[in-house]
Image 1: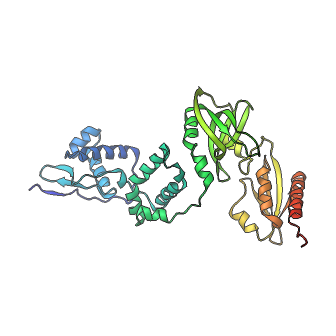
Image 2: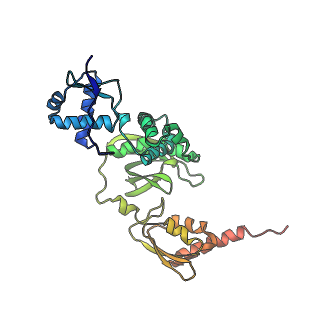
Image 3: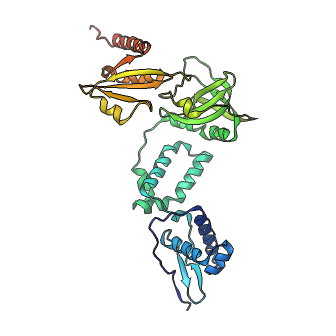
Length: 344
């Protein structure tokens, strides 16, 4: 009987990093041993242009960190797999990474049936075993712990996600049929140069250069009724910078480069929420003696801000600019009039 035993163990730091060079060697060794072809450390070292000591460390890593079923045959001085295995599901991920994958599966559930959805499903299936091992729960149970409310708009917008993403990557002109929200407005066919996809105010938005308007425009994916790539290509406009373009926006609406200073007073009961979740990156908070706060923002478009302010009701006051204060006053007056108690 051949003298077979597990490859000799040497101390290996838990969670040791598998660098690119190590990963390349590990995959090569896996393919070599996975074809039922025992190999010596010397032969593997020659094939990989590495030292025998390096190969031994790689094998120890595969066995100790990845759980690869490798045995050492003392009589033949060879390493061999005791059973077939797939090395990729053995690559370890931690609990937070496992949860992130589960959330991704839920978040992009609307992609099922598309090429991107099939790719995501295949990737999640490959690592399902790892997810379970990482957090001591089956992958299906992890996914059951993550919930996502039904969102009909998500299915509509993600329908075009892969098409838009591919045109961005290949710099192809995109033809879209776009439905504006105005009542009675017919869909418009537009040719645009897709630049970026961004999740703004919980909605996916295509940021594209509109040649007819000679300026960048934002298109909600949920309003696209049709999309297809053309054979035409484009060069992104010189000087376009996405962070600068979005810097002054609070949500889906963007303006020009000129920013407006906005000052808002929040009642004390709302102050903790503004500290917990700032409205904008430019937010600066000044405390008041009564526990209320004054918040300063710098924005280039106030459309989304008006909606945020009205949602706060009587707990907020616009201090500046005057134009915004007047708009909120008019809206609040109309709202109060509509909700005046009617005489019976």
